[in-house]
Image 1 (cartoon, rainbow, N blue to C red):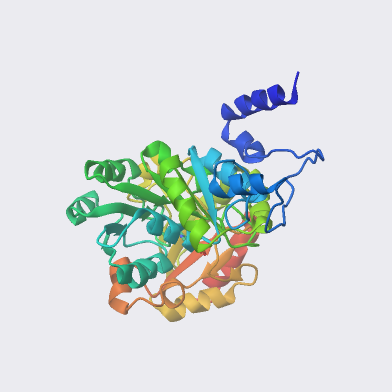
Image 2: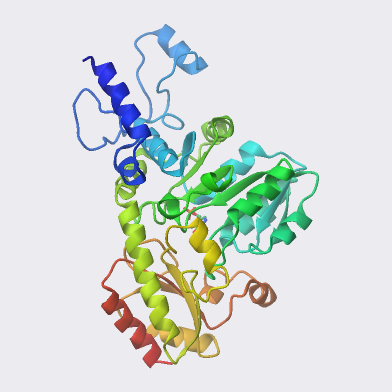
Length: 403
Ligand SMILES: *Cc1c(COP(=O)(O)O)cnc(C)c1O
């Protein structure tokens, strides 16, 4: 058998493989060295066999590497793997999650266009839309992620993108991806889903009708808090536009970071299952504690969108939040009494993190905006890591003891 036949057969096997298999195998092309792990191509440029070949590569007439701002084999392996996991035609890697959202908007929108956005998106996404895209004449309206009618009502003739995260941060609100994809398509707009909290291991928005998925790879795709990166996946036509923007503007992923994310993807499903199991156990336990007022986690049967979450997700993810006592001081006392978990705003790490949203992640909002978003002063967010659940419960008990 020729090597080419072998590779073609391998490709066909992978195309039909299950998610766990794609997470470990998709995208890798072995070099002549026969390496088993994915190599890191730390090179900014590439050498051509002749002047004619250089010309053909630059013009795009011949496929191949040109310059690592837009072609790098390690980055390409990551792009193919995340696309394979999301069930997308093509993926494009970016320098960060924010670069993924910016690149999508810059590639697909123009001055005069309009975005309808969930009001419960990552705070920096809101700033990107209201401060920077607004300056370019791209307007945004903000609506409740859980009220489909508000999305319909916010649509204008120039609406091009509907943008959401589900579950939301930190209150675990669930947006109905199928319903909102229908709303988008009835108005010739695209539904863009930030799938950071679930990852493709738990939720595949494209299969539910979304057009584009964006990621902060910094969170669960890495999973161990090591590197900043992002990705956009979707149909080839739109992804080529996004790649064109990255090629021109330069928010590219470094090959080293791409390698870190490739290693992260190999264990993604195992980790997401473990994060979700511990978060559910902790949420259930917190709900029974006297000092806890309210727990926000879509895995709890009494969560208002529990059934919707169960229908579009395989599990409920690793992030939960809860209210303690009656004010900020109570929340701060709880946080400061913990000894195991890390006080940091990052999430999606093997290490459990704890944060007070009202004075950190949502601190830039006015008190009225916070109230509207449901971020109470006594709210605490926990991103549940991979430590032993008994030790996590004990640490939360220390917090409760300080109330
Ligand atoms: C962190 C985050 C981002 C931004 O990603 P960076 O990698 O930090 O730029 C976007 N969306 C969500 C949901 C996030 O949690």
